[in-house]
Length: 122
Image: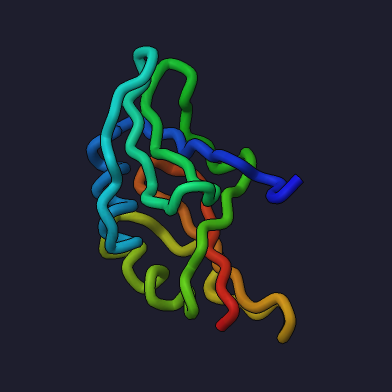
């Protein structure tokens, strides 16, 4: 097994708001699509890389109590974290050092109420 995770989906109650939130925070474009009645906006990735999507549909309900997805915060997660509140989210756990070897994490609530995290080496 190359990766423990091969795909993730972040639920959205307001698809457009969630896509705008992640596009703004990560300074990237998400590719919208619809599959089997579910609206999806795919995070960019290289072929073969782990990725995921923001999803809105009957089976996708935002939650602050479920699984936490750790997004790549780049070299220093302070950069995307600084954009969370301006995009409509809330910082729940500020940038926190785990260890010299592992790096840092921060947890935030997205525009839909999901608990999501960033990880970075610095």
